Length: 218
Ligand code: DX5
Ligand code: ZN
Image (cartoon, rainbow, N blue to C red; front, side, top):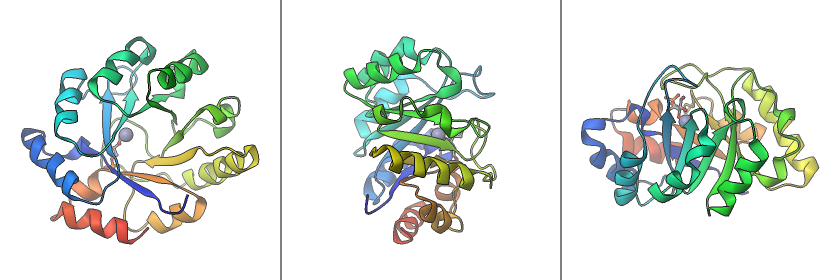
């Protein structure tokens, strides 16, 4: 893959003016729109569900990259598809029948991805790697925006990149959490393809300009 992708996460956006925030992303060079779905069980925080995803889909011109931080995600795959998810990410730690879930996501017409918490080793994905469009490496503990990047992630990403190359797979590597203009270059060097960026964009004085800035650093 020649150029990396930017996926703004609206977790720290202004939810009272969500339409305005999404239109800002529409006008930008961002590639995907990242939505964080939290259940208050798998992670110590709650966000939103199907009705809001459906509303966002009506406004967004970017494909929806839906990151499920929920247990029993496999119960609602069809609902996420109907609400407008294009990419669907489930957590390794929250999914017992991961193989079945990945295949069902693809059958439903979405692109399957699996996310790993910071403590979860990438080698655990060996048996499903070729079935995945993307692996999401959490570079913070999931649940909140604006946290500090975990440095150990570089080692994991390097290891994952080697696994993908050795398997001859085309699986993309996405990182989520603590991405800034400062660590972007080092993350590109270890082989990241897709950057989820929340706080760096939505806490910037000029979010649109920040997206341009991030794209110019790729
Ligand atoms: C955290 C979420 C992230 C979050 C990243 O659980 O999965 O998508 O929005 O936010 P920043 O970029 O602020 O670390
Ligand atoms: Zn996320």
